[in-house]
Image (cartoon, rainbow, N blue to C red; front, side, top):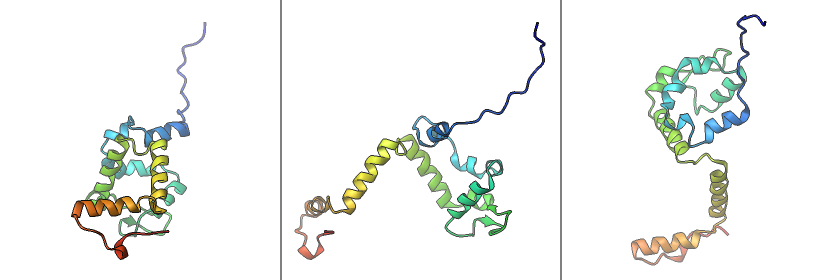
Length: 148
């Protein structure tokens, strides 16, 4: 008869797909979570590898929200982030967009295709006509958008 020793289980490794689903699926728990509270918890920072920390810090627009910037101990200033309106708004926007499915690969592919079409001028005529219709004026030729 096998012994009843308790064996420690190895930590469960999350697959890249699990992480991708967490960050992109409208059904992700992050879609309804208080992301600002999660990200501002110092424990969330402590589990990251140094390379991941450096990548995140490089995304900050300036160093006002970084403690010990440009050192091996650099880290976000969580106290300042909690009272920063941009951080609050960005966290809310991310969860709203996640819940709306705007991080789904298919949705993003379609959005980038539409962006490229707009950038190429495919919708310029439509935008001119919409302006004229809404304002009930004829748009002078020199003010019409032409990118080609």
